[in-house]
Each structure stands twice: as structure tokens, then as C-alpha cells.
Image 1: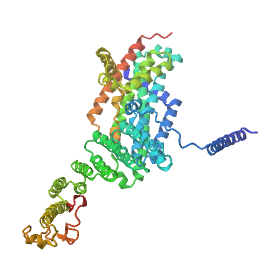
Image 2: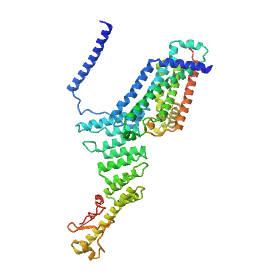
Image 3: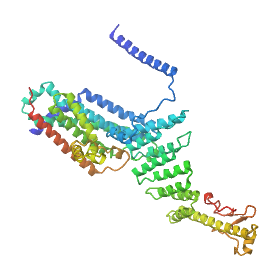
Image 4: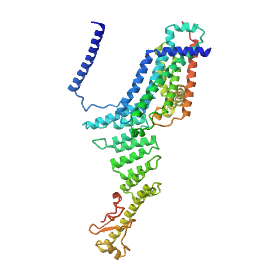
Length: 301
Length: 272
């Protein structure tokens, strides 16, 4: 056999050996599948220790932990495991963001991972907010973080008042887009805090953007309408207390001196009194309709 | 005449180093890693630019440190092993010129390799920029071909210049290349944590004398961690030119001191 042929045979033997090794590995995987209950390990849990161990390669180590975070989240999302589902998500994100405190995506996407309700996520709104607050401490002028905190409260906790407060904070930060201001006002209104909503809307009226000023003026008129509806509803209740019967129309209140005329909103559209439900409502043709639900009027007895 | 002799030694070291298989091994590994960053970036949820920059800059630093340590410590030890030191010192070449020449040659070797790795990194970044749609490019913290990356490369070069001097210092008095490698790597790792040592008393409650002693050690060690601004540049945060200048000045002073130490030791060393 020539040396060339011997080399060829040797190369073929090497390739064949590798193929045989892969086949044995595959057979082992099929015969003994990995159990889903295998304990997952995170060798370094302390962010401080990780920072020391990473020496001057902290950015790279953060990338590695971020990839592990994505794998952990994706793996658990697709698995049917019940115990310890997403258990490493928070520690992995803590390590990633401690190694690279400016890793914006790790904070923002990580918070969504943490806040997603089961079975798609661990449903830890508290941890999501804590992660974003950590990002805010590292970059205090990044409007994305308070905006995301508001987003988490809005979408996952349904705490609209708190969400609106965070949106309002984001709106005051440098570089924040203009659309956050009306969003903050609307969210606060949705949360039911009429006085705070009025304050945010009043700020919008001073904007240098005409569409924001219009939003602000309309929002203020809506809050005024709600206040007016509350006053009118109180008059309806007052009439009931005196006459032991609800008024049948505005004319009963006018006749008894409680009103001087048919009340109207800032758009000069009359309020509607529903004698069946004993409710004062915004006129359906009013440009202020519909009013924000959470700021809604007082309920009758 | 002095400058000519030093240049001659340096050029000889450069030619010898670029023929070293270790250098090719490390260089090939580094280039492969920089190229692989494009693949790794695919599994990081849209963070490919950050990964390429992080991996590229870290590879430049790590590969540069490996080259410095494994070639640097052998520079003098090899001459002693081969006994070629006798013929060299018999020539009209003062020992300090020999050390400075060796240092300059190795720094040149490292600088050429760092430049090649930087070129490879920028080629990867250019490719990413070219293949990324404008919407994606707008979401980046910093542009792909950010010239500020060169500031980090300059800082890394300053760090490696200090490490080269340290490696040469250990090489000048140790007759074993193994121990020179151990000392240099040990000092490198300690220097990468020097900030904590300098502020030891802020971190740990300890008797005042002991704390001050550790603080002092922290100030005397080469502060390799002080050159690290990779994270800032990757995120588009400013790295002031004054900072870079101050760090390079520190590198020049520290390297001069370490080199002075190497000259001092080497000038008194006897070869039998």
C-alpha cells in the first residue's frame, strides 16, 4: 500500500470512528432520555462574586449569562415541568445585570419574562419591578425604565394608578417621547385618581404640540363633566331624600329649585337623566363621550 | 549608536516572535473567536452587535495577554537555555540595552497582533452593519463602526505594555520559564482586582494596620483593571480622552519602573 493510500484509509477510519461515536451517543440518548426533573445548577449565585471572578471580562460574562437566561426561559416555556419552573430566571438576570449594569435589553426583556403570568412565566411582578428599578439606579436618566415599570404595573398587575404615576415620571425624563404624557394622564384616569389626572392633563395643555394641547383640553373637560355628573347625581339623591321618590326628569329638579336649567357639559351638550336607572349620564352625542370608566360617577343608592 | 543597537535587538525579537508557533496558535484562535461571535450573536435575542463587540474586545485583551506571557517570559530564559546569552553579552551590547531592545521588540509584536485582531473585529462589525436593516441600526446603543472602540484598543495596548514589562522583569531573574509564567499570571490576576485591594478597608472590616497594608499593596500592584472601559464603549457611553491619556501615562510610568527593575536585576546577574 502506498503512503497516499494509507493516508486515505487512515482518514476514512477517522471519519468512520467519529460517525460510530455519534451513533453510540445517539443510541444512548434514545435509550436513556434525560429526565426533566434533573436539578438545574447555577454555580455562582452571588453577583458580587461573579463580578470578581469575571476579572476584566464582565461584559462577556454578562453576555454568557444573558444567553443562559434566554435558554432557561425558552426551555421552561416549552417544557411541561411544574416544579421549579423558571426558578433560575431571577438569579440569572441578577447576575447578568450586575456584570453589565448598562445591559438595557436584559433589564427590559428580563422584566417581561419575570412578570408574565404562569404558565408562560413566573408571574413575579415584584421581581420585574425590582429589576427595572435596578436598571434605573444604574442609568437614572433612561426614560425606558420608569416607562417599563408602568407597563408592568399596567399589563400584569392591572394597577393603573401606579402605572400612571410611573408613566408620568418617564414623561418628565430627557428624551422621553411626547406620547407618554397623554398615556400617563389616561392611565391615571383609568386608575380613578381624578385630582392627579387633572394635574397631568393641565400639564398637557401647556405642551408646545397642538395635538397634545387638544388631548389635554378634552381630558380636562371630561374630568369636569365627571365632577358635574357627581354634583347632579347628588342633587338626584337629595330629591329622593326629600320626596321619597326619584325625579322623573330634569324638570322635577328645576321645579324644586335645585337646578336653574337643563345642565350641559363643556361642549354644551345636555347631560342625560335616565329615570329608570336614576343615573345622570353624559349625552351620547357629546364629543366628551365616552368618559373614563375608572373615574366614573358616583353610583346611586 | 545606542538607539541603533536597541532597534537591532528589537527587530530581531520581532522576527523571532512572528515565527513562534505559539503566536500563530493564539492568533488563529483569536481570529476564529472574533469570527464566531457572529454565530453566537444569533442566539442572543437581538444582541448580536453587543456580543460581537464584547467578544471581540475581550479576545483582543485575552489573546494579547496570552501572547505577552508565553512569549515574554521566554525572551530572556530562552537565551539563557540556549547559552546564546554568552555570545550576546560578549558583544559591545550593554545589558540594559539588551532588555530595552527585547521589550521594544515584544511590544511591537503584540501591537502588530492587536492591530490585526482589531482589523478582524472591524471587518465583522462592518459586515453586521451592512447586513442590518436601518430599523435595527437605529436601536443600537452605539454605531457598529464606532471609532471609540479604538480608545479601548489603545487602553488594552497600554495594559499589555505594562504586562510585557512585568513578564520581562520576572524573566530577568528567574532561570525557569515556568516560574516566570506563574509569577506573571499571578500578578496579572491580582492586578485585575487591584481596585478592590486599593479600597480594601471600604470592603472589609479589618484592623487598621492590616487594612492599610493591603491598600498599599493595591497601589503598588500594576492596576490592570484600571484600563478596562469595554462595557462603557460597547454601550456608547463616553470615554473621555483625558482618561485615556492618564491611563496611558500610568502605563508608561509603570512599564518604565518594571523595565528599570528588570535592567537592575539583569545587570547584576551572573551567567555561569
